[in-house]
Image (cartoon, rainbow, N blue to C red; front, side, top):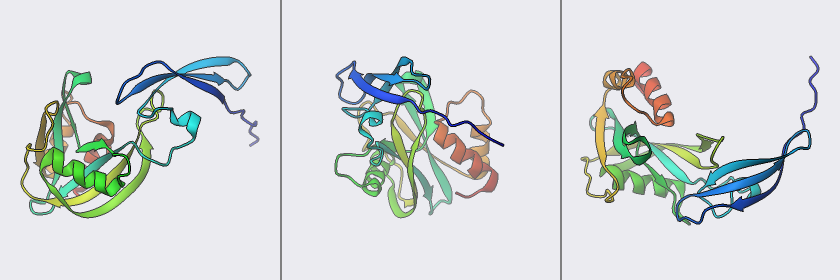
Length: 199
């Protein structure tokens, strides 16, 4: 089967529309595949969006998938999210600080958000993108074994995080509840865990 060569889009420039600390909106000027000028809005955590710098190697954040070895359960967070005006089920997560490794960020965020300690790093994935239609934010999934007792002592004032430790059957019941809101990455991991009972 013969396929025609596809012309790629050409990014001309990015105009920063906001000047905020954690997140900014950019207007991206693009020439489409038929030569027409277009505009696309992108949100980025960077001073310049990655589509103009080409710097996709450094992830913005980590998502930690913790398994509590002492209890034999997966660790889930239920956290209040302003954008949802309610709770979201997911995993501990947070931004990677300047000069910080992915592993160090994962260990720090797990401790801060849950009070648990990572005892072993199992897998560190590549940067992945959840909403590429609107943002260049990338996260790295870090699977860890952990231990300890849950605590909210490390939570910041804006954070309202509850730690839930669950078996595969309990996770299955959570995932089957249509009233609950899930982080997309967590949903994929949790439904697989519910089916197979392991990470």
